[in-house]
Image (cartoon, rainbow, N blue to C red; front, side):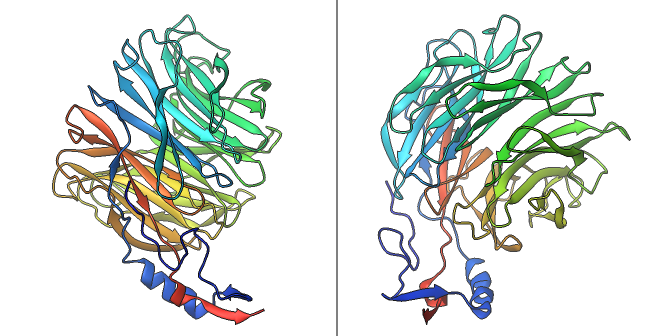
Length: 438
C-alpha cells in the first residue's frame, strides 16, 4: 500500500521531541498552525477497499479503536453471498493501512437482501456489525447483528436486534464503548405513526440491557435515519431526521442518554435554520470538549440547493456557539455529510461530503478539518478519480491519529460501483512546536 504523509513525527508516530523535554504549544504556535494546516491535502493515493468487483459494492461504514492498531470497513455487495445483497468486511492494521487477511462475509443468513450495514469498534479492537435483512424476522426487513473479535473470528452467531417485528425495521446505526454497545434503527408503525426511532443497549458480552426503547418523543409523521455516538464518559446521543409539529418539514432532532440508558433531558431540535428540509444527520463524539459534533444537509440555506451545516455540543448538551456552514462551494447540492473525531483529544474533527460538479464531473468527495474544535481549515478533495459520481461517504478514525474517508465510486473498479478510501493526515509540523525544558 502507499506510504502516508508524515510531518514532524518519527516512524512509530512519536513526536520529534528532544530527550528530556516536553513540547508546549504557545498561542503563537497555535495561530501559525491554523494557517499551515489550511493548505494541507489528504495524501497518499485513494485506494480500493473491495476485492470482489463484480456488480455493485456500496454503502460502506468504518470503525476503529483508539487503543489498538486495527480498523474495519464493511459494505454491501451484490450477489457475492450467492443471493442478492450481502454484507462484507475487510480488516486493516497499522499506520500504513495494510489489509489483514482477505475480505470476509459478515451475514450468515443470505436469502434475499442484507444491506445498509454499520460497524463500530470498542477500545480493545473487538467490533460489532449491524445491518438490515429482508424477511429474516418473519415480516419485512429486520435488524440483525454479528460480533467479532478484533483479530479473530466471530463471537457466537448472528442475532436479531429488534424485538418488534411487524412491518419494517431498518437503516441501523451502532456505537461501541468499553462497557458495551447500542444499536438504533427506524421502525414502521411501532410508535403509532409512519416511522419512529428505536434502540437497544447491550453489555460488553453482547447481552441485552433491558428492552428496546423508543427514542423520539414526537410521534406524528416520519422519524427516520438515526445515528448514534458515545462520548468519553459513556453517555450517548442519538440524532435523526423528523417531521416537525410546526410545518411538517424535516428537521434534525436529538436525544441524549446517560451511560445507564436514562434520557438526559428531552428531545430537542439541532438545526436553527428551519426553512426547507434539514436531513441526513451524522454525529461524532467530541473528545476535545467531551460533547458531540452534529452535521447535516440543509435545503436552500447556502443559497443554492443543499449545503452542509454543523453544530457542536458541550458535555451537558448545550450548543457551543451557533450552527456553522461547512461547504464553501455552493453550486448545486452538497449532501450526505459524515463526521469523524480524532482520537488524540486535541479537538480535530473532519467533515466530509458529496459535492455536485465541484470536481468537474458528476459528484466528488470533499472534506474540511476543524482544529481545536472551532477553527475551520481549507476545503480539499479526497477523490482523485473524478469520472462519474463519487458519493455516500463515511468517516472513521484510524489508530491513533488519522481520519479515513470512504465512499462509493461509480465505474472505477470496472464493474458498477466500488468502495474507495483516502486518508486525511494533519499532524502538527515539528517546527511549530515551542520546546521548553520541564
